[in-house]
Length: 268
Length: 287
Image 1 (cartoon, chains in turn cyan, yellow):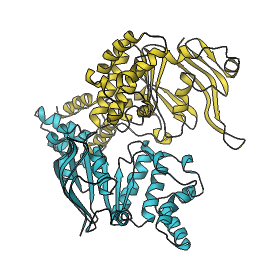
Image 2 (image 1 turned 90 degrees about the vertical axis):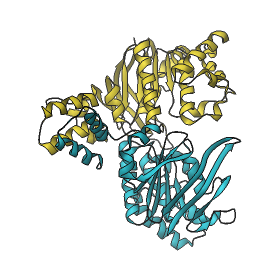
Image 3 (image 1 turned 60 degrees about the horizontal axis):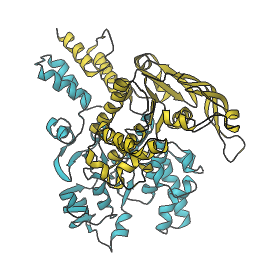
Image 4 (image 1 turned 180 degrees about the horizontal axis):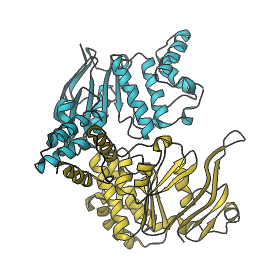
């Protein structure tokens, strides 16, 4: 089954300045896809289209087989959660518990079940001990995990991470990456939007956007060594591969080191 | 001269009596010219509070600051015996989200706002704007545009040009590259390094990117739980100190070096500071 089907979608904020053009993309249930691209490539616009915050100018989007329309958008938002870049911009509750409850209140979940879900998902992403704290007292990584708990509690099966780690310190980033891996393990469909290669490497498939179009698409392992595509789209190759390519330029022959560099690039 | 912290402590007053200690016993001297410093440490360790003392946005709860000869402590601030405007002009601080601070109709108006406030003539300020928009990697056509239609990276550049237009001696940037793509990040870092090298200014950058620290900084400061726990050379920090204890990462170049050493069971004589140095070491290995 397909989680998301994007068919021939275009979008523009201003006339004659298309931000996305003729995007075609299908994401299967349980798949982890990375949307990679430079600043202004249209990545975040794409994520806003998928959750129905923006409406495509042309083309259509299906979520779990249901066409995204004005009538279905509220049902679909219960299936798709999004974690934004700035951990400070997504809190509504006075305490962490209130914040996770917010989405559930909107769904009119009975109180008993709500309490149970909050505890279950807070435990899952390891924020149980902060339930009674004010969100602003948490670190960036903790805030992002609270945001994830809020989404999971709504039983969404698709989660979009829109540069969700780019403002975190190394510890916070690792916390969130670990949580993403765990979600994959549980069969969630994951879309990460990023310009960091080692984050993209965790996913099954990479879609490279450039100037509003899909420049290239392929398995993570293929894209990560595709020097031309990465250079064209302002992205950075992983260090072991950069070293490997530089050595090859100079006709370096030590196969053992070359093989090792390739292997290390897959385990960053 | 320069910026001196003398036994500086800073406490945020909360709702409870205790408050929250953000800086503890900070002693630190920063030269007014020629330094390129990175400031690192986990979220909440006190980095932003520390730099907000450097241009007297905050006053130490106890201890004192000497900012280019001006003494900032509870008493001088209470008695208003110290002029803050010249400090703010000489020590330029770019906040973490400079894009939130743009407010004028055009980019040019935004850039000249600061210098005009400090008594620079409009003609002179516009001249500066024309030069500085190029320094931050944009072209003159941007000057007539509205700041609100720019991308995040472009907005950052405009706000940095606005601070540079005040011609500060010391430039402080709070996470200036977070959220930028790799190319945008490298371009901007080159701008800062250029400002430091060509104009001889002291530049201080807060970052979470250990590669930036390792590649550019001559001096690195590490904050941990309100204390300044390290002040020195980046190589020494990443090779000799227990950085995991401070929740810091190892720069990619060192990580790769360690992995190669472990897998090939070799020990390189030195630690590479950049990719070129590592390449040389690998070529040695082949020979």
